[in-house]
Length: 190
Image (tube, rainbow, N blue to C red):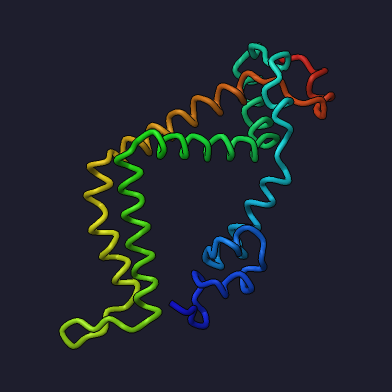
């Protein structure tokens, strides 16, 4: 099928998306050249070195609840990008480790891709009325919902949230604050 003007999945999308790997994969412009790519690049540029992130010498038990809360706030600010990549890794692990969830996600994304291709060719008319792409996407989501339910997507979401809270919370709570807060470290609690 020859790419139509404005078709973000066509080979011509490489020119629209700005080239690079994303353009070669013909991803939608909103992912390959838009806000999502900028956000991801910004996160990647602010990531702290993983050796510093997991340095075991920097972990200790907080003295009191105030220090624990302070560590949580400061470390979440300092290692925010690292924590986002930990979250993304947990999501990827959860999807890959559940074949049913992987199939349900493939069916869901495949339906969206087919709808996208069909709306580029012609408009869908049902009972004399035009069905908008938004309604088609809504119908595809509704049809995909039972697949996600059978695949256990709800439990997967809560597993990812729980694992993220435990991992990030324990890392941020037990990791000592970086050396930038020397004045705060000299003060003793009253």
